[in-house]
Image (tube, rainbow, N blue to C red; front, side, top):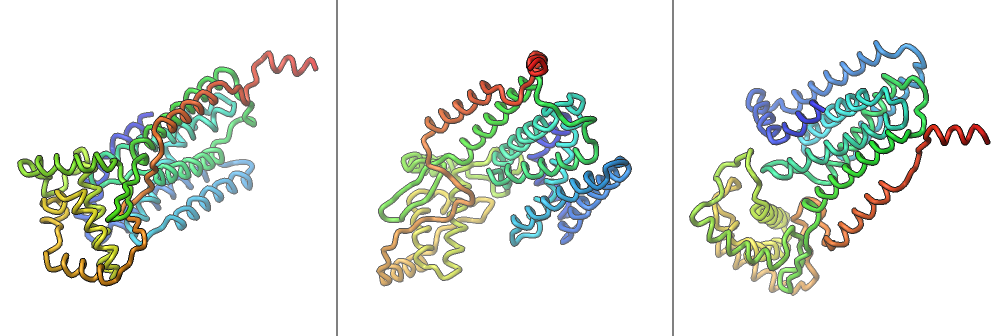
Length: 369
């Protein structure tokens, strides 16, 4: 639990650690972090080599499968940024260790809980960590990252079973273990549901002029926030430098995302897309255009550029529906009431189903038959 708590509580400081590495080893971030991953993996494999004395084929095979899954998943998720790729690989080291420690904590139980509990507890830790990352500037926490943590937990569990297998094949859950598993599973479900509600439930904003985009806020809320931020930022503008240990202003972040998308489309020659993104900014994120932030000294187009874009778009007579791609991860315009009804129903089903339970009386009855 201590390592899990450190992992969660260190999330706000990871950005500073990365910055320190870049400062001390300029241009060597990937090499340094990759070296740490290699050292951690080498230590784990050495520990496995010292621990595995019997059933070598099966146990080393499990380790090989774990490494193959981690490698395949890392390749599938790899993007254009080598630094982001190596950071994602580091997750496998982190959550492999967390899973191994949870596994060792419950190893003596001898039933299926030694497999189920580490996965569920690791999922809770991973979800809370991603939630903290979402709350602070310059960090990203979203559903795909929780999935990455879950895959890392799975590979960590495979490694743990190979290095330190149970003394006998895990039996079905006893009553005490069932209660613990149900409690932990319910906690994992509710933790993820809260995370999903905050990060991924939002609104589809449809505007007859600018098209369609997704937001954490409804259209009416965006209009109200625009007025409020315009007033507030005149007296107290956002910091000109990123304050990493602070609460992220999600309205500002959404505006910056539209600025980046507008600029990307414009630079790629998509005049209409750039123009419509600019209109989204003018109508819903005007304070972001006019206020200096850590992203720069304002993002409003010069009058000449705006007039040129408007003229070219009008001349093209393109009336195809526009759907913005500015938001970097999925947002679902689901009913929050129906969402939580489904979550509570699923939690009730988990708590009520006596699956995989075999009490002493069950065994006795079975023996009599």
